[in-house]
Image 1 (cartoon, one colour):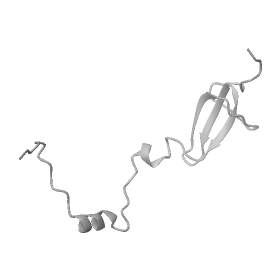
Image 2 (cartoon, one colour; image 1 turned 90 degrees about the horizontal axis):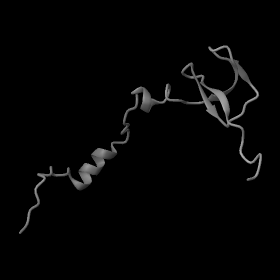
Image 3 (cartoon, rainbow, N blue to C red; image 1 turned 30 degrees about the horizontal axis):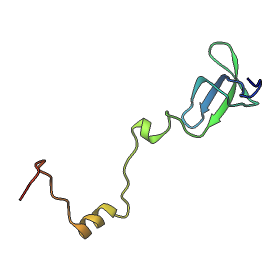
Image 4 (cartoon, rainbow, N blue to C red; image 1 turned 90 degrees about the vertical axis):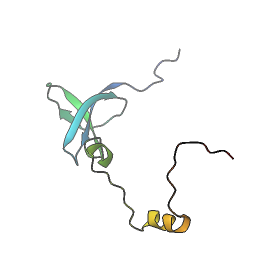
Length: 91
């Protein structure tokens, strides 16, 4: 087997500056900057733009935007769909 083929897998801190949230995990990502963590260790820190703490889907702040009325336009053009009864009809 070839040696030194895979990158080093180490403990790093990912930090979401927008949410003020950081978490310790393992990764192959590298960084020149370090941070002192709660356990007394010093780890490389990688800043990310968005994480589960700031993403609208995970925070429950997601919303559907229909700014141009596309749903209303579709219903005007094709008509509202008739509710299904769940029964198959045969003739």
